[in-house]
Length: 398
Image 1 (cartoon, one colour):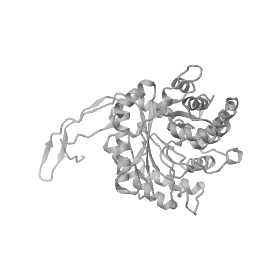
Image 2 (image 1 turned 45 degrees about the vertical axis):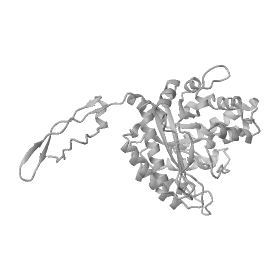
Image 3 (image 1 turned 45 degrees about the horizontal axis):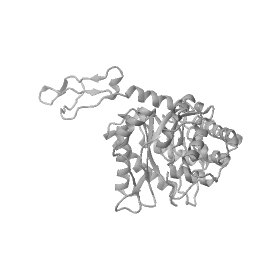
Image 4 (image 1 turned 90 degrees about the vertical axis):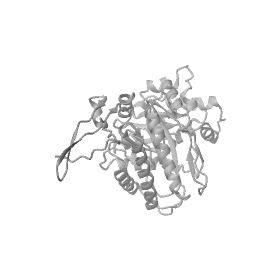
């Protein structure tokens, strides 16, 4: 017999029982005492399936099929504008629309990319021929996603750390995004090693991500949870590992406290690597070993997918590191959710000239294919045309 402690004040959630029924009701449990056997009555344990549970699972499953990753194109208008101005293109809504249309209409992207994260402006934009961006993505076999956080703000009484805003009104906004066609979403919060990190900054990062994830799952959106450990600093890989251990542990604690369903969410972490100014550099094998050690110690196997951010790594390094991780056994779909690491050469090639759009799209498709190969652990760097210069920007703002 199994001894079960009866506690009527804390009903137990049993998500695994929901596969066959939307409601599970507990039964009487026999508690064995030393002196005598008594029957302890336990309150009915009731767990109800969420309105969107089946759709959330379907979305997460389709986005994490072998070889699939995510195209991150959710830069704010200011950041997108900086990229455009860097190649001599004026930052206007029409130019942002033109560039984003180039990305989402690239033929064949759906073979390697399960979804594209959009900025709010982009979710409501359309192609030149009148096709909405949402429909254009669906046509290519990609889910539309949406960035829902409202950006970073200075954290009071800290050493220059940040907190992420956007919880106010999130439920209402998420419902509207779902209505517009979005089926997943992203929230980015950051932790800075040179600035601490302080306990309050780590807790705020973790709690904010958990509340966001719970709210968005209830609105039908698969949440991407992004606790980014910034590359800023001269710390070594061991210090990054130490901080990431703390951040990820705190994040999953709050996710569990908020009853977030791990099999219906995606994690978007940074890889465990040395700081950008560290004199001791790491290779792909070392980064993969440290990162997988971190994942195995902190991330539940039930988590639907691990979609790494590139975080300023070079296009080539981000692919090589991902490939090295997938050459070792792990229980997750370990993949990519790259912005700069997919787009950097693309925007430089296009540079506002639509006559070069096809050439730019070929580069984007190649980068998507290379990272798809890395997701399956079969990327061959000797056959790659991708350049390896760093894209790190100190104090990068998304």
